[in-house]
Image (tube, rainbow, N blue to C red; front, side):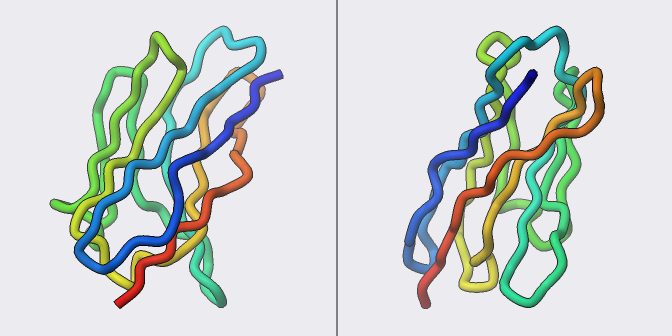
Length: 115
């Protein structure tokens, strides 16, 4: 059974940077696409960025040019580098992954950006 664990969240001032990690553990045969999503209080969960196993990426318009998604397939780990953070980026960030039995999610990590 594959599990995802996010880390790297925290409190940062506007304009600052953070790097989130999402590590997969367990019996892993293959991980296809992976992605980062976020959910702010009172709002629906929204897509932040996705990356295929081959490295093709897709970003929400709100984070283009500021966030960079990447993955290390050898380590079964995905990253999200977040620069020029804004207060509106405050949310719980979740990672997900497409595996053989479907889509799995991590538990989330809080990112808070102060103005």
